[in-house]
Image (cartoon, rainbow, N blue to C red; front, side, top):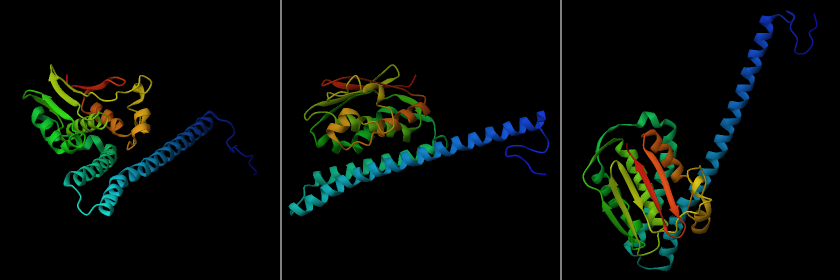
Length: 248
């Protein structure tokens, strides 16, 4: 018996129609999954290209220094190494986000000690531009994951140093469950501000100053949500930016 395309020998029974509808739905879901996976793969490939470029930048700078100077100041070497390490750390944490929930360990954390450790680790970013760091945080315990909170604070501090002018000050304060990091930098335009947490968004500052993947704040926002931290950013162009982390 010959069958027309799309027909079955059972005719058009209710069971057959339901089965065909089920198969059509499964096929549509499969196509949508394939589309999403393809999009994710393409985005990851694009981000990896950007990161590879950003990691090469400090290495290229070190190579040029070695070619033009017989002796290279340790501060210049340390700064370029820190830039490369920062980009590599950003990439690794982007990869870890896929298994984020399995890498959380909530416990009481000394917030002041954590901030001091992060600041000390990244002090070369401030020294390179002679930026002061003012910490107004009293000893206090917050329940969170120390590793991921350290990463969040690190990203915020490095951004503050990156977009602050020379001889400015970055202030870190804590009051009533809210940690604030304020800078005297270039600020963020009103048109860019709503999009700063989007993956890959660099905005006018990224285009102007370069060395931006547009992934730092995207990762920070995702991590803050996992840690139940309310993250907000306010900014005035040419005056500065305030990033707040509310632990309540």
